[in-house]
Image (tube, rainbow over all chains, first blue to last red; front, top):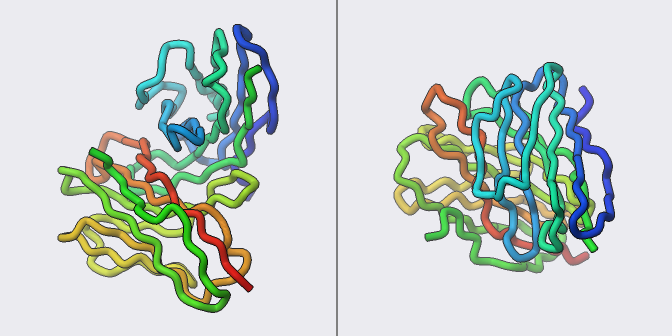
Length: 114
Length: 119
């Protein structure tokens, strides 16, 4: 079974631009979660989607948004990029039926904002 | 207060020795899950092991075992017979509300321990 895939793997943007990151979950997984990893703040939960609905949300500004499609693929969008948005963005998928299930992570997208 | 505390920023261990990575947690939930992930320099988070709060036995997965001490709120990862490929960052994470029907996928992570295996 193929793992979680994320595209693109690397991205360079300038302040003020917007960016869209994509995540394809493991086949059969309906839940997709997004995390931001920075040296200063560590790993922080952004949001989670299940069956095209946002089910959980972390403490991030409204510039960070996401969506999920009927095939469970998810996109994350960051508008008006700031230097502090430079980070590794990880997505994780799980079956989503019960909270005991393991989340499996993708390789991440490294975003650099100049 | 930190929900997940990993007090060892870095560790150096001789190849083939066992190593214990510390993790303590803080929650008022009765139902929760504890996870360990490995993150090599490539960035991908690799799932290692899971322990549910109601599991009576310590979890084991191959060379990995979890020393779960509920009263002390600790969930230490033990790697037996360490290998060079074990060099990576290791993160302890917790999911709360595991027993509820409502899905709570949020994982709270610790700051990680960088493990270096010395040949």
